[in-house]
Length: 173
Ligand SMILES: Cc1cc2nc3c(=O)[nH]c(=O)nc-3n(C[C@H](O)[C@H](O)[C@H](O)COP(=O)(O)O)c2cc1C
Image (cartoon, helix red, strand yellow):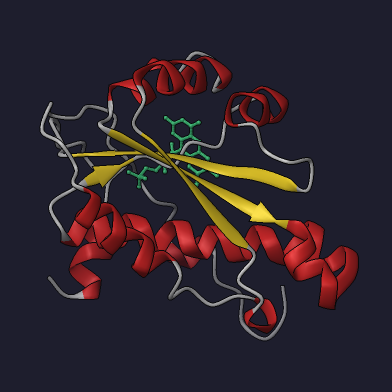
């Protein structure tokens, strides 16, 4: 699958088959993640891999009760390691670059998953403190994305996109 096909066919998928996602597959996803660009190549990302049922359910509750998260065989939580980028970039690194960097890593995971016949859903609606507590994150680590991943059991239609001609501005706003 080429990159354009992966971009076009990736869909937020919330129903998964009971089939497992192997450690090898997870490694491949994470290798794609760390190929993402990052400000100054500071790579301010860490990944928590969750397979434990109790942890998955606790995470789903912390994500405002989005229980489909717990139904995925594996959940990757993409975290921003603020001091790793603040070391060079101060507040701009800790508050801004680290969110862009982890978002880029997340999209790489989703595109790689699509190319591998897997699917997931970018979950951003969660209680930061509750997620940090469940995962025992140190206070300098910010959870950015919860990513349930599995073999898709649904084929969602693409939600409509705003046409490009309403979005593109030439030379000025
Ligand atoms: C920042 C962000 C936060 C999101 N949070 C959630 C979420 O909490 N729960 C959910 O089911 N989907 C969530 N989504 C997925 C969006 O609903 C989805 O990307 C959007 O509807 C477009 O559909 P598509 O991903 O299939 O193109 C989120 C996506 C992004 C980028």
